[in-house]
Length: 242
Image (cartoon, rainbow, N blue to C red; front, side):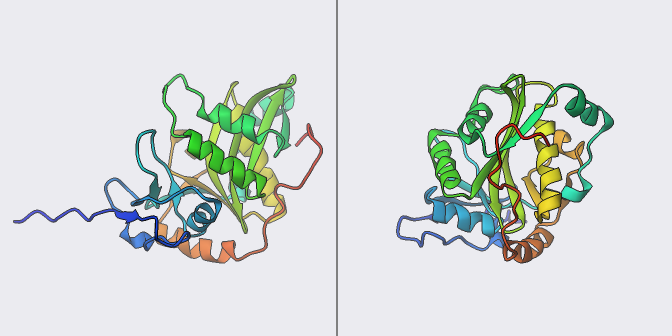
């Protein structure tokens, strides 16, 4: 039997429209979700990607790679699972949470080498692109502090009633869990109905994330993107306890 030919990945050429992407149904099964390569990280293209259920993810030396995996890992803010140990840690260890108070510090901490990996996919170009999205009010961060030092955080992009998580970091035990707990709590109270986690991990599953077929995710996304922008990230005074 003849072997099926691999489907080529769409290349985003310089003369393609700044918001154009191929249909996500064209994404590869292996590697799961790879849809396109090339293009740029301009704000208009990034926002167009998120609104279609697509995100950039690539390593230094590679072209920009665009993904829409099937299934998609998601977290419903109202069903976030805060374990007793996490609730106790937040209460007893003096964690303080801020929103959009130190975006650059969060993204730099996410890009720093980890114990399990010396590399990072947050290139200088990615960093600059998300700093610009933050300046434009589309990208946001959650920071967790203890004794004046940042001990965890996360960042991502908010569109309509969906928060598209990009990366999270723990600089102290439970730091990233406390950040996600604060995000889920605030999201549930302010009209943000879905947190996109992109890909599954044991860490996220322990906090209540689940897989969703891509078709289901895209159907929900269409309605939630059209909703009024959630007020999950209002301008608040720093060091406000959550």
